[in-house]
Amino acid sequence: MIKIIKEKCISCIACISACPHDCIRVDGLFVSFKDNGFCNNCDEKYCKVLCPTGAIILD
Ligand code: SF4
Ligand code: SF4
Image (tube, protein in one colour):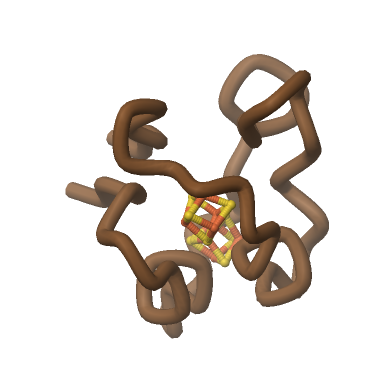
């Protein structure tokens, strides 16, 4: 499962820059996964590692 907790997101867009597969987009004031939650599930999990607030959950 992959999810962005909106309450924790500060819209810094670090995750958008970090994702090598272009899976995340700006969605109003927040960010979301493109195409109904598409994520290539990269081994590095750059989005989660670089999110400064822990807003991205990857199980
Ligand atoms: S886990 Fe990897 S592929 Fe999926 S959104 Fe994060 S950085 Fe992109
Ligand atoms: S890196 Fe974290 S805080 Fe920044 S936009 Fe992405 S989910 Fe939000």
